[in-house]
Each structure stands twice: as structure tokens, then as C-alpha cells.
Length: 342
Image (cartoon, rainbow, N blue to C red):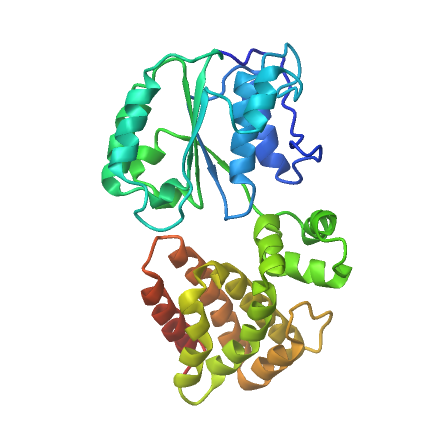
């Protein structure tokens, strides 16, 4: 095994900053590295933008690093190649989030390549990104490699949630979960990237994306953050409107903005939480639309608000089951209206 007991994992990114947050996941992986028991097949699960691929690259770099101490040292030739994504013994595949876009042919080619000995490192590392987009046939083909991997191969897979994979595949993976980090820590990371943005805006974006830095940063840069804020009040109004038509109109922009759904659901949760606070004159309100919270507090009972909060949680889970996006939006409208007694 390349990683012997007593070594330490270095969580410094190529730009010199630290990989922030997810201390439990880092400790779990570090313990494996330091004990020399890094699994041959590792799964990093977490929302898009939570650092799955970055962590995968750091672990891959640690696997090929030639330093006798901290890994990846960031200084040896192997580290320079690995962290610049040009190491001949580290291969990345996948990366498309669209369902069923990771086909069996790619996995068959991977299986053949896996039996080729490393070029210059003691191991070969294959990073398979967004494996939730694998077809069932591709997952079954991968299973053969998971069951009898060559001793020189390490597989690092990433996905949103392990439940998206076949049980036969899941059972052969060592899974580590990543999540968003505290909003104030996420806002500090965002400030390094966007120093001209106000602290209030960065904190709101971090809160809206549940501390998932990558998603918050992208939404601030491409303007979708502002679009999501504009979408939330009509969504709240549609929940209590006399006709379902208003809610259908409010969700129409999501037809072409699938990636915004997590933030929309989280933003709606915050509004519902504030609505409960409004009913009892509590503070502070933390959502991006306190007016919407007050509207829902007046229109709905405590039981209806609690039912809506549970429903939003269920919708989160449904989204992770690779459900058809149009079908999901239909489900979202019907479930929200039902929970509100409409």
C-alpha cells in the first residue's frame, strides 16, 4: 500500500488556501490514510459545489506523492503533476450531471486500462465524477472491477447521494459524506473570491445554498442568485393562491434552471421557518423574503406550516432519486398545495 502508517494528510489546495469545513469527513479520511488503510474504492457524496472533486484530487495526489511525511507535500514532482491534473497515473472520467450520460462503453474502457501498470507512481488512481449519471448497465460493468480490483488501483467516485447508486455497487464502496459548511465560514470563503460584494449579500447567498460554497459562488457570478431571490415571493404566493395556476406560473422558470432547485427549496424552508416565527412574534427573521413569511403566517395555520416544512424535506429526498425534472416540478406543485390545504 502506498500510504503507510504515521503519514499525515495535507488539506491545502493548489492556490495555497485550506480546504475549509467538513472536518468530520477529513478526519475520517485522514485516519484511513494515516493507518495505511485507504480503501480501494472510495465514494465521496455531497451536493454539487461541496468540494467532492477537489477532495478527490487531494486524495489522489496523496496517493502518488513521494514525500516521506505529509501528503500531498505539494512540492515533489508527483504533487506538481497531480495538483495540475497532468499526472499520468491519475485519470478523471465523467463529470456530466445529466442522468444516464455515463455509459457502459466508458466503464469497459476503464476496466481494460485498470490492468495496465502505473507509469511512475506505485498506484493508479481513477476519479469517477458524478457516478449518479451512470446507466444501470454501466454500474453493473463497474461492479466487476469493484469486486476484483488490481492491487495497484484506487478508485475515487463522486455523487450527490449514495442512494442514487445500485445497492450492489454501494455495498462495495467506503462512503464519506460532504456537506455545506456554516454560513459565516462559507461567506468568508466567498469574500476571498468576490471582495467587492457586500458581507450581507455573501452571507445571504451562503445561507440560501446551505453553506455549499461552489454553488453559492457560481450563482453570484452568473446572476442566478438574484433570479432565485426574485422567484421565492411568487412561489410563496402561489402556495396560498385560490388557483393552482399561480404556483405553476411561479415554478415555470425552474423548467430551464434545474440547478437552482436546491436553493429554491432551501429558500422556501427559510420562509416557512420565518412564517412560524411570525405567528408567535418571534425574531430574528432570517429568510430573504420576510414579506412572504408574513403572508404565509396570516394565511396558514401552524399545522399547515409544519406540514409544508415536512413536504419540502420530502421534496429534497425525491430530487435525489434521479426523478424526471418535469415530473418533479409537477410533484412539487401538487405536494405544496396539498400540504397547505388547497
